[in-house]
Every structure is written in structure tokens, then in C-alpha cells.
View (cartoon, rainbow, N blue to C red):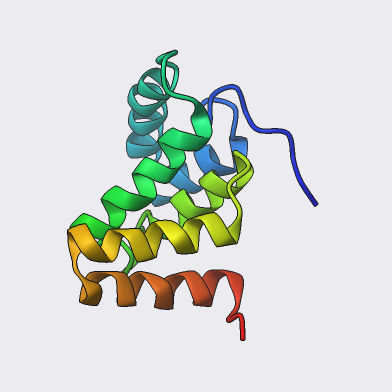
Length: 118
């Protein structure tokens, strides 16, 4: 089921805000305000910004541990219209620039989140 992308992937996603606040209320409020402002910049569309965040997670290896943003960013990208196939292609593309081993861990996290495709 396809949802309508948010105008602002942070400020309009109450589920994301609740998850951030659950980690820590002050942290959640701060992230919502600061990231919401960045996500509100007009020149790059929300889907592209969300795919960029997934790529950043690959580079800095933010796909493991409590509070890791990789799954949240994959979910965000999908809410903005990205498909699993696009995210998988992004991960393969990132092998060239971030390294095969980093991407392997992200594929593992992606499969845990979305289920394995065989």
C-alpha cells in the first residue's frame, strides 16, 4: 500500500517523532526541530533526502544497536515513495564508495526490517 509522501519527512511524521521522544524527550524535541528545519529546505525533494540519509548511514555504519537510525531512515525513504528495489540498488551502489563489508551489514539490517527476499 502506497502512502502519500510527507511535505516534511520529519515534521509531518508523528510516528517518527514519538520514536525519537521515546529514546529521550529532550533529544526527540531537539532532533525534530533541527532536522525538521533541514528537511524543510526547498531544493532537494523529500525522497532524495531520505535516500541520502540511508547512504550516510552506510558510510558511518549506523545500522546496529539501540537507537540506530538506519531502519528509521529506510522507513522514512519508503514513506517518501522509495521502493525496496531502489534502496537495494542504493546499497549496491554504495559498495563502490563505502565498501562491500559496510554494505553487507546494511543488507542484513534491511532484511531483518523488511524480511528476506529470495
